[in-house]
Image (cartoon, rainbow, N blue to C red):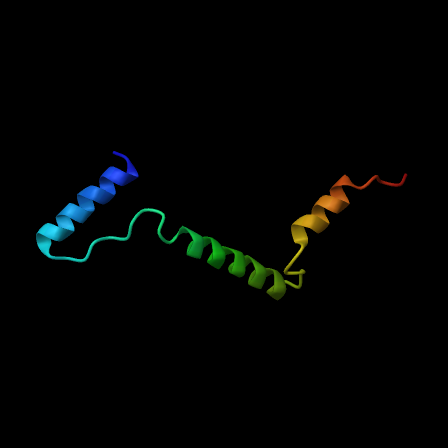
Length: 68
């Protein structure tokens, strides 16, 4: 059963029982991604690491030519 089919089934059951419909699939995805990003930034600050630009800095270190 796909996500859409499950959502339609849950919506139908909610209507039959007079309950509120469940949120549509993917409705809160962006909010969840923002919260994960903020949590990672907060964790970095608490651990004493820079909160922004970490990926770019790591790539620059990894891709730069190393002196022998």
